[in-house]
Length: 407
Figure 1 (cartoon, rainbow, N blue to C red):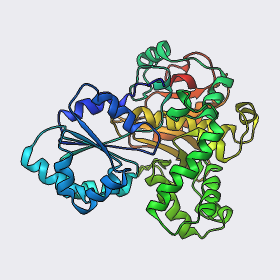
Figure 2 (spheres, rainbow, N blue to C red):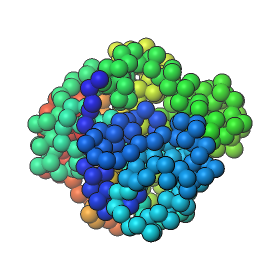
Figure 3 (spheres, rainbow, N blue to C red):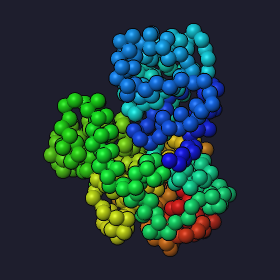
Figure 4 (spheres, rainbow, N blue to C red):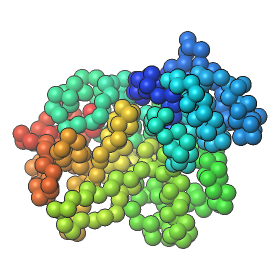
């Protein structure tokens, strides 16, 4: 099995020298344990997983004994199963002050974060690992995506180029390590097992009362709306559940790191804005499986091609930030006249507007909407159209054309 180096490795190494506890969160099967075990090679760090029911029982009933049996430096896998450990880890940290003593992994982001923040505030570095990014798959330079011509030019030299068909192949295949590194060649079988084994197990862990078939119908209804403004009533209707349930279950998908939201850009000088977030999946392969596309070809010419391309681009840009240990300040814009900007990146006191289009020949009409940001109190900087054009280019001095494969 080929190990694909992860960009987050650099960040883990850095914070291990600074914090006594490093927590890597993210959904199951994205490679958290594989990455940390790779980084452990040649060190004296021990490993224990709370998937082992015997170890879990000791961790929950006698956390003090557990830490005597598994002395730091140690990697504790699936730590969400024994939140009782956090207090004892804190006591150890406060007594010894050793950076890097504890590496923890967990697949339930918010539930875990609550326990961690209450017990280990100021002592823990929390990092998110997602499914693989384009850059990791092609061994490219990974830094947060910005609209900077020099940086984009560097990216163009180390990314694996792809035409429209190639991009839709990537979207359809998804970005889970087991598929990308060839362990599982059939993505349909992989996602079927993933849903029934991992997702269902974690869902049950968070809420016993969930009916598996209803939850599958629900997550399928959510996938059908990826890249769209969140409409809880529609999702609830399709899944045959009430809206309270739909909201709770969306919370579970977010907790498990399956979906995320892009919130509308808010600015006191911009009036008449939509307030509802847009919904995206981290992994487009799961979207394609749930919405029953049989191949990349049918997806490319199908009714969802625009929405799923947008989902892919938004999630890839988000991954470039998370994989660098940074929080992405990403938004979208839509007003009451239905004028929309797909992505707004905010950084260093400026806004970068971005449009996503399946076209290979973007024209000036696509960037007219960027002018809507001129009324904002934060200045507008360079813009971009991310599209299927094969090479980096420009519409004018202030607006670039960026191929999807270059993100």
